[in-house]
Amino acid sequence: MSANDKKSIDEATEILLRPFARYTDIAWAWEILEKRNYQNDGERYQGIRDKCEFIELLKLPFRNINGVEVRKNRVKTFGEDAREYQYLNVNEIGVAAVEARRNWPALNTSSTKLTPIPGFSNKKFITKDHKARQDAITPVIIDAYNDCINSTDAASNADVLARIAAWANNSSCKDKYPTLLEEVEGEIKWQSSTKVEILNQKRLGDRLRKLKSI
Image (tube, rainbow, N blue to C red; front, side):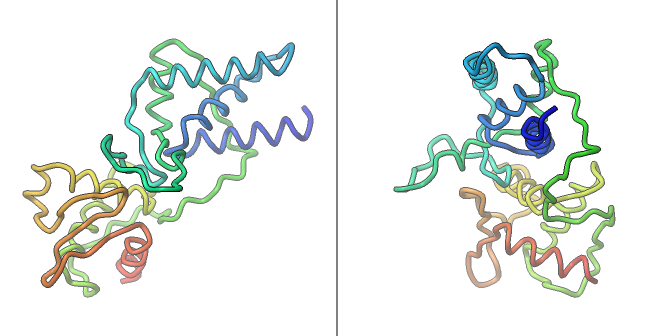
């Protein structure tokens, strides 16, 4: 295996280990990890195109880099990169591929240097008897974080924000968390005691660090 081949395999593995990735990147990584012998570059391109078509037919909801679903009727802004709103859930594609009896790569992480995802690696729940930031959004953040790590060993800021966004877009959840107003392109609008405020990934990360340090 050449150095370039190893680099491509490591990059492809890193892509398929992400929770969300652009669907074109997923198709490329999937094709690379099949490790097929090609007669020419056209065969590799056709393999990637075939996988793109398979993914497109799944009609999975597009997301942004944080995993928040993109509204179908969102208005595009001038000069934006459309690819930033073409992320998909990698695991959902893998499950669909297996169900369709397609070859989905068995990932080897032993030699792959993974890009760390901001978050917390220890499975430690945050209690609600905290002293920091006693406002309307804090209990929501704690519930979302604890809900995430209840089913996994680590919860990234993106995971927690996506969970809150899902609650903000669900009418029954908004009954439980009336402070949540709506999710708009990856940011959460919430009602404080005096005004409407915004929760994005950076602000969420700052709050979680303070809560975890208590």
